[in-house]
Image 1 (cartoon, rainbow, N blue to C red):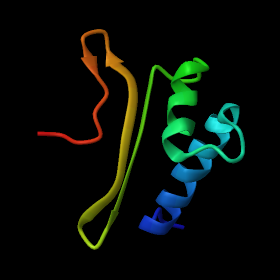
Image 2 (tube, rainbow, N blue to C red):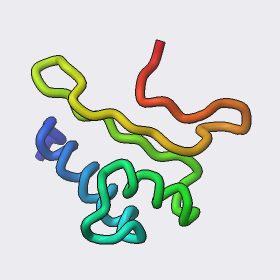
Image 3 (cartoon, rainbow, N blue to C red):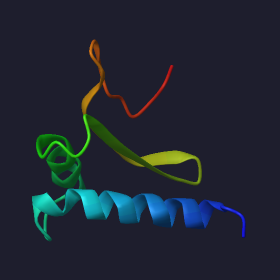
Length: 75
């Protein structure tokens, strides 16, 4: 069984949901990402959702390393 795009997204969103449960069931995606960092589960978290090559959602929180905030995009 290969890891296709659909499986990758499903596993990633399931992990995000499991980690973000501290934000509450009706929390926004932004609040769930912030809760992952605030609860100490991870030092940084982010999610980018693209559809047909366009970004439809992007949010990041926390610090990726000691000097730089975590970003949802790269240069």
